[in-house]
Image 1: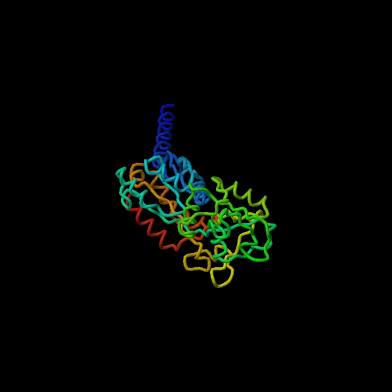
Image 2: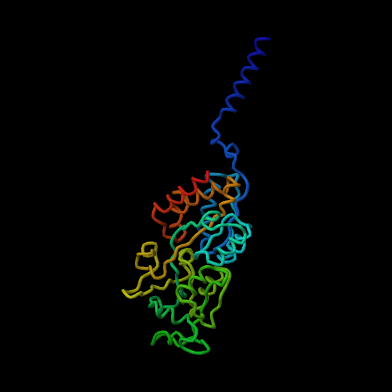
Length: 323
């Protein structure tokens, strides 16, 4: 009996020893990573970042809760600057005044805040499926139509004003509102800070824009290529002639040196480096975002053209230096 009791204790000790020596990678709890990662900002970037977060929580760190919002690029920076978020997604570059506001909070851009280019997006103009006349437009026609005062002082623009022979029906203009980097990119880079047509209807939610255009034969709207891809059963994308013939926005044409370059823009995420140093889950998620399993792999699935691998690798090196 004594020998059996001793053998039982030895067996229990062996089991305990084996458990203590188990590979910590075998379970998520043993990895030591938990807690929250807070991301907000661009509605355009939202589908891509949400997909990255979903994959990260599913395959890498199920005990980390990555929360991704879509307040808009400008609204996102208003949360990021005072330290309410770990990441701020943006469909336009951070502005000088926002960098100054970070400095006021003691955050040095480039040291305490990192900028990561995630992918390339194509600004896309969409029309109703019943619109069979404007499937191809020149860049000048699009810009002129959206500019205030081009055709009428009151900006009641008709499709026939844009091109003779088109319907003598009012154009219904739609787009994202001022909270969104897409609006700012269009206003600042394409319209060169000239006033939009007075009749434009600006919305906070991209889903609302999709619904409005899909229900209005005479509508035209602009937003990121990804939202068109996910709603192409409801909308038609306008092919744009930049001078060498109409070019449809596609993953093969969107790029800074490709045929759709005239309406191509990078999209970004910004990292609070201090939080990355303080919270291991924030740094770990940042590394995943710019890894081969993150934006590089998932960009195309969400309507973005991925960057060259060397750019993501450079971001990885930058983050590896943090720990």
